[in-house]
Amino acid sequence: MDEQQIRQALQAVIHPKLKKSLIDIGMIRNISIHDDVVTLNLALKSKRSPLKNVIIRQIEKALVGLPGISAVQVDVIALSHEEFHQLFPRAPLKGVEKVKQFLAVASGKEGVGKTTIAVNVALALAQQGYLVGLLDADVYGPSIPVMMGISEALEMKDNMIIPKEKHGLRVMSLGMTTGRNEAFIWRGPLVSKMIHQLLDQVAWGELDYLVIDLPPGTGDPSIAIANALPHCSILMVTTPQEVALADVRRAIELFRKTGQPFVGLVENMSYFLCEHSAKPIEIFGHGGGEQLSKETGFPLLGTLPIDLELQQSGDSGIPLLISSEGSASVDVFQKIAKRIADQTQ
Image 1 (spheres, helix red, strand yellow):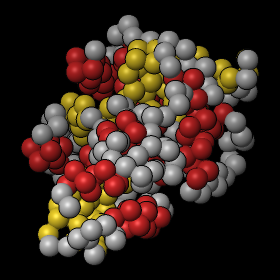
Image 2: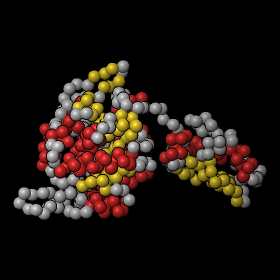
Image 3: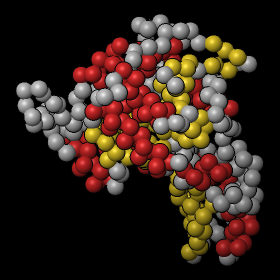
Image 4: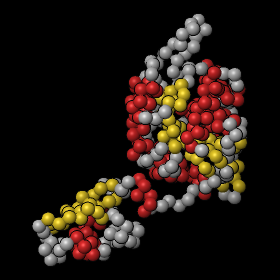
């Protein structure tokens, strides 16, 4: 038996879902024959695919017993992110079909000011002339309605949710669907389903950017966004201290595995300016963002101080870019937005 004869025999092995030959769709690879043993790779979504054992049995049934073949060794390998989505294309998401660019703001841990940065970067992009939407995908603790000062009930049209217009942004959050103090309890598949609905059943319309505020960490919402929007760019937020950098590194590794592109890093809480000292006070250490930029090759787009105005604006429902045009932090946000636009437009 030679490789061509083995491939011919394997034409009969059909993928249970795609109903196509595994040979024809390239999921059987690297066939080799040594003595009377056939060795090959089987490429599946993951090495733990529930279809693995069924398909391996089909392969063994097709080959074992052929002249000169006594055994088959199947090594399961994982399809790349791109290969998987070529074989299993997703149905288009109706709500975001007119969105040109997706920008997810992510962090490895809580308390680094990720949502504040998402809100103000979105506003800076809008002030630079872009059509921008803001999606609060933090399904566990949505806070954008408070930061944006939105309390009105949502409306529906043609079975689609209409995002709220505020400060030049189109805004949607789960926090607009329930009482402010109500707990959100989401598990496993429900998280992915909710993220899908926020993308598919909200009438975002034509947008240059949809800025997505992800919850901290590497859980289901981040994975759901990566699966739904494989070309969504990632903006990582950190603070200077090593404990934050360690968590950010784990989050970066997640998005690298899913093939997401990175636009860069933002270091928040870099320093504090006190009226009693001309020298910045580095409360959380120094240089964490620069260190991470060197490690990853991602540009450090900006460093933001501990700014009392920034904190107060979030609590008041009037973001800093609306309430304080003269703030030094406003200038930093504008520069960050400009650098993002230069990379993505």
